[in-house]
Amino acid sequence: DADVTQTPRNRITKTGKRIMLECSQTKGHDRMYWYRQDPGLGLRLIYYSFDVKDINKGEISDGYSVSRQAQAKFSLSLESAIPNQTALYFCATSDFTAGYGYTFGSGTRLTVV
Amino acid sequence: KNEVEQSPQNLTAQEGEFITINCSYSVGISALHWLQQHPGGGIVSLFMLSSGKKKHGRLIATINIQEKHSSLHITASHPRDSAVYICAPQGAGNKLTFGGGTRVLVKP
Image 1: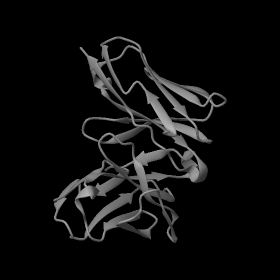
Image 2: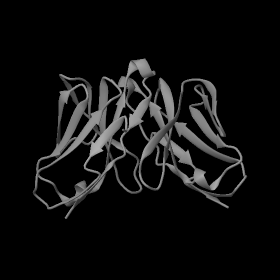
Image 3: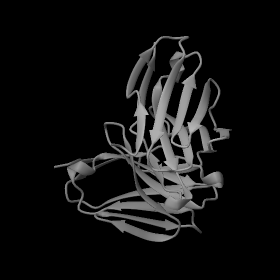
Image 4: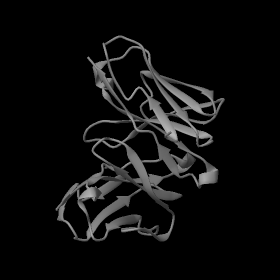
């Protein structure tokens, strides 16, 4: 099993729908992140969490919300999806025990039509 | 101006050639990551370094903190090295800032 698992891998949804992307990890890392990647742009940070009760906005948090349900789970929600949220979404983890090295999930390709 | 600049943006090499990818950054950092993204989209962490040089197989990463510059070298390149390579300085709060990536194609 992958250390960082994202579900779903691919999703097509309609404008205005609520959608949740899920991330779970078996690394035991305390820090979790959600990034999006658009063609021609680098990855950009949406939200991050350093612990279960810690949630922080990244550079592009508008239109998104997150939930850290447990140390191992970090979910990203799009409350009302819009077409410009079509992107590749990555969850990642890091931890001081790993020297803050990062582990990435395989990504979720989201298309909003 | 981007905080992280990678060059070149695209690179085509013949199998066996030596490849160098450069990364310059303007932010203060505690470390710098080199990531590899294959056509399928998954991202793999290759290196995390804060000084000097690291080597893993045919890959070598160097960093000069004073000059705010890092390089990734691929020796004896192989078609399976074809991927996008991303430089990501790690700054305050251990957050990453990402370069735009270098698309590498190694032809047999």
